[in-house]
Image (cartoon, rainbow, N blue to C red; front, top):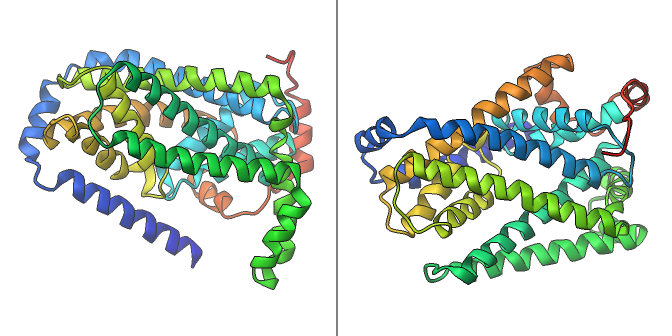
Length: 346
């Protein structure tokens, strides 16, 4: 039942965004813009995308270092399988999949791994807004975007404060949660809440936090370059780098919303809305989103499939994994880790 509701909500959200993106657009003009696109830009886009995912995995590795030091290859494999799952499962359930994969292989709690993924999202938010602020300082942005940035920043700060409180006072925080949830869920909430708190140990490691910040800048800088190149590929003439920055922030924010598999609809809605701010017609905006979507979808799925089959998993298992509460074999995961110990901390 929960699964059906998840799928229904994701499809509804994507449908609404897609309706906005295509409403009033001339599909023949969009296809013409795609036919004229310079697809040689796809080569550096794919390279930058895969490098960004490698950095994303490295950043996640350092976020999990307070729980256990895990080999980079293992973390990268879990990351790519998780994002492959995001492309075939609704509502970003791939985040649960990658937490499960790394938890099963490394013998750690999936709840702890999920906590580090939430911290990832906080770093993503602050990094994007930081880049937005730098670009805004040297460029002219359309009216109203600064207010949107402030609202999102406020949400991010509030979430960060809650996570820090959770980390500093896990027992008290969980106790408060237990007072507001139904009695039949309290036992599982208490267990998951404490394990989730374990994954927030990065707040005790100032050096790791600084390093994670630099890795976040590098990763999002690469993704910004991919957005810029995708805009160039379809010959859209807008001020740069502010045009690419607005498109990146819009796409990043709307694709955080639960949606259909592969962010179909949300990405198109966010991308076309961002370019409309600069007076770009929907036809060109849609062409841009399709090119950018391709730079993310095809390389991620190709590498994700490689690791999926290497791990002996199937598409059917991805769906079942997303609904499990904890890794199936934590002890087995520890034995697998012993066969893949890192030679150093890099």
